[in-house]
Length: 184
Image (tube, rainbow, N blue to C red; front, side):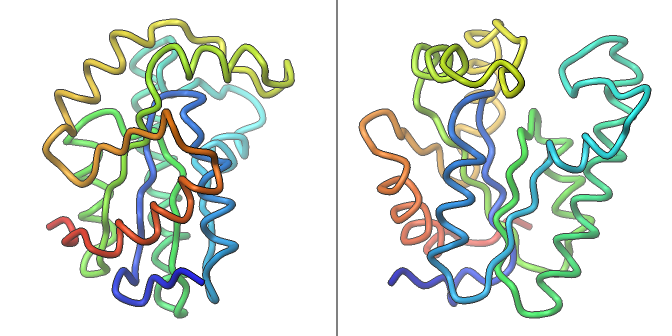
């Protein structure tokens, strides 16, 4: 079994909508002896009225709710880490400022970043085949991929998952992420 003892703390698993974040973090967490998955979507869905998607409109309110979501994600993550769990955070992190904010909230706990990158066409196909209730109404993949590559191409691990199954991705994520230095 894969272990993550060298990578205690949190691995933020980011990527475009339908990159496989939820599937992979769930599979990876189940491979570890003590692990939790903290999902940004679950935290966002706690808002029952007035919620705005992270990339939605009005932009000002979306930014405000992303901050609230990230504060709650960090608090949950910190609690799990402090009680001896490895955490896989499923969260689309869109820029360095957001990443720095999360890392600051989680300090001094170790945080690593993995960006799942199966490619635009793969994400579009995955999104189209999702159950309609799980589908993301989003089609600006090329811009988002370019933005993510610009922001995170040299931070953490840009993980091309296009040729891997979800199970292979989860196993490799744990094996390789444990070798990444924590973000500061």
